[in-house]
Picture 1 (tube, rainbow, N blue to C red):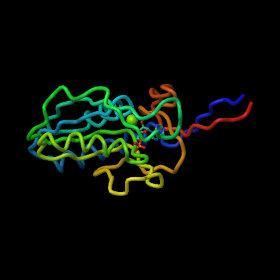
Picture 2 (cartoon, helix red, strand yellow):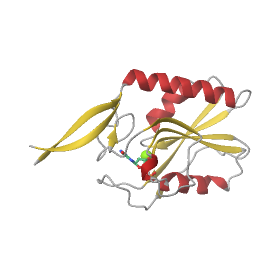
Picture 3 (cartoon, helix red, strand yellow):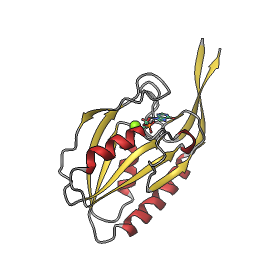
Picture 4 (cartoon, rainbow, N blue to C red):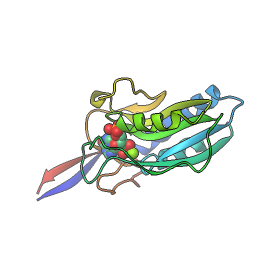
Length: 178
Ligand code: IMP
Ligand code: MG
């Protein structure tokens, strides 16, 4: 038997500080424009909300759901669309808010799907980035909160088997023998 142990990697205050900085930078970059913040369900939802709160430009919030993970800590490489956008993005400034970029497969699939819809521009903001794990080298976020090591992380939207999304910090999950 092993138990799940979580150690704090990025604390609540540090997350808040960095999200405020990202909000300031993105608000400056999109000055005078409306931004469609698209949260990627479920993991990107808490970050999409926290980031949107820190934007000073007008914001429209929408969500997209894709699925690539089961009860496993590694990607299956198979991305399925579960929920599409409610609001058309033609001619709009789109900001994808994602929890983490790992292999890059999810983001690549989302970008491909949104690319044909005539958005004015599509930018990506990821709370976390695991650059060591990238398979698709061309996939980078325009804005990144924190680069993290190649460890399995949970909290702030990130789950293990649907658990821990509600943690207000980002922690490393380890399995320790009992
Ligand atoms: P990618 O397609 O490999 O880039 O994976 C992106 C998705 O995998 C993220 O949106 C997460 O849902 C999930 N993911 C990747 N790494 C982790 C992790 O360390 N903890 C929890 N979920 C992860
Ligand atoms: Mg996700």
